[in-house]
Amino acid sequence: MSRPIRRISLVLGVLLIALIANVTVIQVVLAGDYRDRQGNQRVLLEEYDVERGPILVGANPVARSVETGDTLKFLREYDNGPMYAPVTGFYSLIYGATGLERTENRVLTGKSQLFAIDRAEQLFAGRDPRGGAVTTTINARAQRAAFNGLKGKKGSVVAIEPATGRILASVQMPSFDPNILSSHDPNEIRAYYNALEADPAKPLLNRPIVSLNPPGSTFKIVTAAAALASGRFTPESVLPGPRAYNLPNSSKKIRNWNGQACGENNLVTLRQALAISCNTAFAWLGNELGADALRQQAQLMGFDESFEIPLRAATSRFPEDPDAPQTAMSAIGQFDVRATAMEMAMVAAAVGNNGTLMTPYLVQEVRGPDLAILKTNQPAEFAEAMTPLDAVQMTEMLVNVVDNGTGSNAQIPGVRVAGKTGTAQTGNDNPAVAWFVAFAPAQSPEVAVAVVVEDAGAPEVSGNQLAAPIAKKVIQAVLRG
Image 1 (spheres, rainbow, N blue to C red):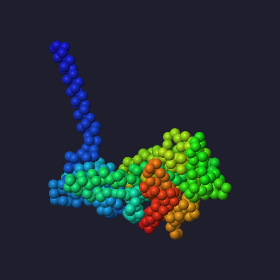
Image 2 (cartoon, rainbow, N blue to C red):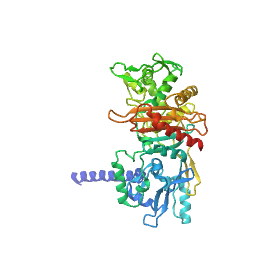
Image 3 (cartoon, rainbow, N blue to C red):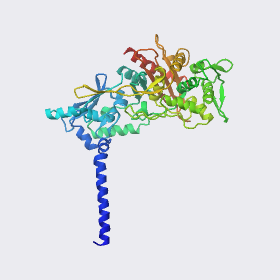
C-alpha cells in the first residue's frame, strides 16, 4: 500500500472514530439533555398523547389536562392562570414549558423513575399512560391576598413559612394568562407571546424570584444583625444620627429621608434608628462594622447564593469590594446591593425562626396518577443566620418599627407584627421601588412576607403606604387559615 493511501486510510479511520464518539455522546451521554430541552417539538407532540398530571395547590388543581378529541389529545388548562403563573409557568406547543411545567416535566408526563412500577402496570393492563401530580407548598389564601393586593401596581410578593422554608405565596404584577400560551392555536399563541415580549413591563419575567432591585432600608435588618453579632452593639447602643452623614474620603453626603436629624442632639439608639429608618445612623454603623462583616451577615441570610426551588432564582448580591463610601451606601441597601423579593422574605424568615434560615422550596409532594404520595420534600436548614438571643432582640426592634415607627400600616389588632419599610432608587432617571418585609412572631401558623412595588416614585414612607398594606393582608390570610 502506497504512503498516500495509508495516510488517507489513517485520516478516514480517525474521522470514523470521531464520528462514532460523537454519536455515542449525543445518543447516550447527552440524550436526556436533548430530550428535555425546551422547545423540542417532537417530544412535545409525543407528550400531547399523554394525560399530563395536575399541579396542585392543596387538593385543587391549578393546572390540569383535558381531553380534546383532536389530533392533540389533551389541552392544558389553568384555573386563575395569571394568579398562579409565576408558579406553574406555561406549557406551550410553540414555546415549550416554563415554571413548574418545565422543572417537573418528567413527573407530570409520568417519565420519572418514581413511576417505573406505574408504567409497567399501565403497559400490562393496556391502560393509557398518565402523568403524576405535583403538590405545591402554596397557600391559596395567601396567594389570592397577595394577587389582589398587587392589582394596579407593578411588583411582586413572596411569603415563606419560617420554620420550614415552604413558599406560601409567589405573585407578580403584571402577569400573563398561561391558558392562551397553552392553547392549540399557533397564531393565537405567537400573537400573545409577541405582545408579552414587547411589553416594557415584562410580564413574562418571574419577578418574585428573578427581578433584582436595591432593597433600600429593608437591608438595615442585615446591618443591624451584623451589629448585634459583632458583640459591640445592643439595641440600646447610641449612634450618631445627624441630618447628613459625610461619606469618608468624599464630598458626597447621605441624608435622612425626611431631611431631619435623628433623636435628640443628633443621637439615637439602634432600636430608635431602625424604627424611624435613620439613614445617617446606619451609614455610620456600616463603616464601623466594615464591608466584610456586612457581607458575612448578608451571606448567612442567603445573599450571594444560588437557589433552585426547583425554579432557578436569581442570585441576590452584596458588593464584592466596596470602599468606605460604598460600604456606607451598602449598609442602607443602596449602591450595588441587589435582592429579589424571595431573598428579602428569607431575611425576615431567618429572624422569625429564632435565627435559623431554612432553604426555600416550592414543591411539597410528588404523587402518582392515582394521587398516592410517592415523595415528600423535607425542610432543610441553610444557615444559622443569627443566635437565638440576637433574633429575639431583632424581633423586638422590628415589632417596634410597626408599633411606633415607619411600618404602622402593617398593624393587625391582637397580633404582634415585626416589619421594616424600605425605598430605593434603581437609577438616576428611574422611579423608586418601595419595600416592606414582615413576619408575625409567636403566631401559628407562622409567615414571613416580602413585598416590592416597582415604579413607586415616592419617599421612604411609601414602603409603609404602598407595600405594608399588602404584607398585612397576606399575613392575615395565612393566620385565618
